[in-house]
Image (cartoon, rainbow, N blue to C red; front, side, top):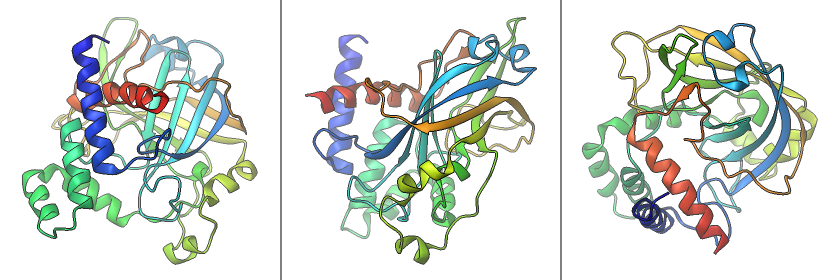
Amino acid sequence: MNSNTQAEGTHLVEQLAAAAGEEPGRRLLHARGVWVKGAFTPSPHAAGISTAGVFSAPRTPVTARFSTTLGGSGGHDGDPGDQGLAIRVGDLDLVTFTLPVFFVRTGPDLIDFFRATRSDDPAVFPAFLRGHPEAATALGLAGKARPAASFTGVTYHAVHAFGLVDTAGTTRWARLSLRPLRPLPSLDPALARTLPGDYLTRDLTDRLPAGFELTAHLPGAADEVHDPTRLWTGTETVSLGTLTLTRSHVPSTEPEFDPLRLPQGIEAPQDQLSKDRSTAYEAARRRRAS
């Protein structure tokens, strides 16, 4: 990372910390979480879709972290918000959320979003929405979301489009998702609030082993492929393999997840948000360590 990019990341994280709140030494947006270990097994045809090594190796170890996005260390798992699942499998990092699209298209817009949601002025958030109509889709989905029964029973999405490069050098853009092999119905919000604040973490051991199918969702002809705030109309999905998470595990060295840590055979997303997230993740790590 060059000095200009590092300075941009530091500035972005400082603004994000001021807008979203911060606990020293903890993650800004994923403070509550739990680590697990497992493995990824590719589908029989995955190697024909992408030349990435994880799709040709028989089995690749996985380190993963489930998290609750909002609320800080004192939050409750039943509060409105979404869950996250970050995995490291070989040279690939996937940082995924239960929402299939994002609220904004850039890092600075995310800061404005948090400022607007936390403002005491009732006019600020409507003004933000007028300037950022792209946020309506994710907000609508978030408003309908209900508390998860388990980390292992919901679908997680990487909201960016990744380029899957096959042996002929052809690139197909796709959104990658992790779909539970045993999906679980959501909880009633009132019931969820009667459970312990960390009920998702407490419940996890009893849910393991748990499996997820890694799928590639292909866009429709008219879809805006590189806009992470837009849903796609395309319905075609391709199975890339199975992620099996077997046990809780605290790594001696935590992986430094990066949305742009990708192997040969997977091209980086082209949207600005993916670049801003990568820069901000690195800056946030430096901030926690300082």
